[in-house]
Length: 238
Image (cartoon, rainbow, N blue to C red; front, side, top):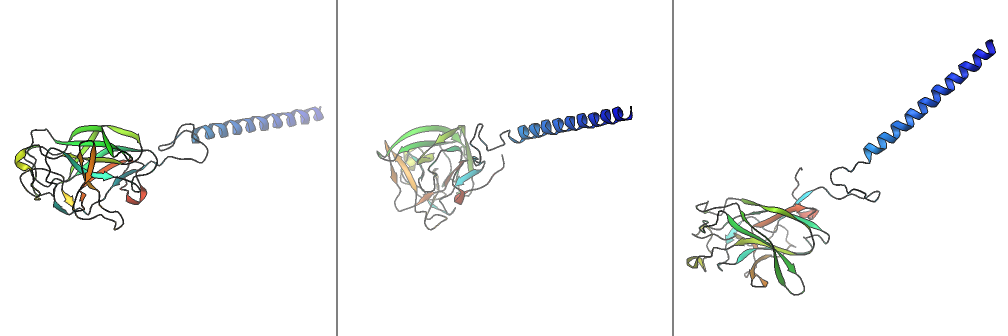
């Protein structure tokens, strides 16, 4: 009888151990499922060890010191965003920021901002977005204010160079005016980049192509989006 009791006791302990092992295994499975849920910045069904950067970058070419504006009216003026500062892979374009060189005088609700795709071979441009951004009539005239425009919907998965800027005033009376703080709007232009190796990227769209501004200048016009280059990145929290 005592032997039977020991057998029953051993059987009970073994059963409890089996239950504990089963519970532990189930808990490990649940934990694995929790940790495998894609986090911010990850891709669903991603390959092991891969991760998409979840960072917001701003491409900055200028030194933030306005010296002039482009004197050509009724054309988009801004920056040409090119390699190697534009990443080779896909990126998004979600927001633009800029400084005006003069009072905003057109009847638009805000500055007319434009984003163009550029064919690097044919040097042609194709409009991707056009929207009102930031400034309106009667705004600050000294080139100091920073204006922001959010694209109606982010341009996702873009690759290669692109142009972004605002439409210089269409009023004929402003043609040729290059003064900072003058009476007509235009993107403020800077004489240099923040990095000596960056070159100059101020440009205007001229029909189906674009023209780099001379003398060599950068526009105080910046673009923000996901997965822009780390070395020129402004970090944000999403």
